[in-house]
Image (cartoon, rainbow, N blue to C red; front, side):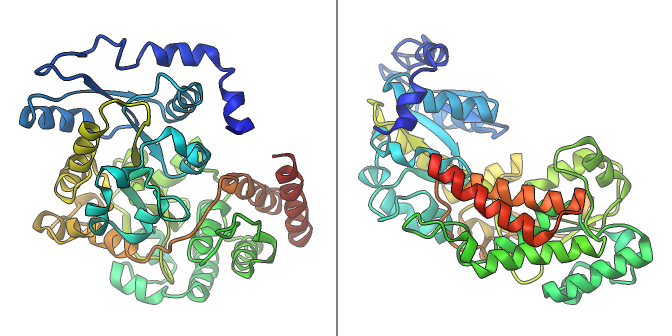
Length: 425
């Protein structure tokens, strides 16, 4: 086991808490349900899985499932600690897609879902989603995909109209079908409204980056970012908009970002499907937000996988439950009840999905927009140090945006910091 996992064992207090939550000691149903053990499941966020577990138990009275939900950061740290210790991990754990690389070196702590029947359902899922959940050689399946976060372009009708562009989703998408056209749009928005085209540098860079075939590492986990022309192009494109005065300085999740959403302080927000709830929450009284496709493709931000720990003595029962929980039929229920966007294309063909409309977004079928985006996402290898590289590039762009830093020097400095940090890993 590598240093990463040895270090985590030192977090003894968290381990003790987790040990108290294990199926052997929880007292939350162990031994009930017709003599079976309780299947413990750890999740984060608002998934609605508690209600679906109740439904599953009604249909399978010999199964008892205990779902525990905690904040995302605590959830992953607790899971990491428990797996490092070799005890205290739940039977089932949800892992966010951005965190999954952190766990790959601990493959031996997870059950291989291919040994439990996962090959039989592989065809139900988008190929790129499935590939993220398996090992590089395709022999080991860490987890079954839950929801995903395909990206599209949210836009304010009032700002777009003032800039002289059509507000109908299809017409606007046709007008902005290339990034070159989006650049002209940005100039027009700035000139005619005095507002930025986008809220911050991060989302415009991410939108361009996610359409590249490779990002920061190749599949041999070699650093390629410095020589990857597509990533440098995404950086330069973002810089060009900054230099036009078309990029806002409203960092994600800050009060000014949410306020800007409510007041229409920027024209577009390049975000994932789950951002619909964020927009509604920040701008509950607005009738101006709409959604259409992004120029030249789409990306993905978010989604999770359901894993089974190797230490679980109920792997077959746990697998039967998660296979049901993320089946196309149940994902349709999660979409209708909780807005979780399905990773199963068959769900997109269901009548409830085809006929879905959202009055908040002008009565359009937002599900169809994101389904189209989901099928455009590229299968990209990220590697365990992906966020390290992303953070340094964001530092460079924010220095250009906030401090007027020289773009080339900021890029060179970021590449140097990345190499230095990786050498210390």
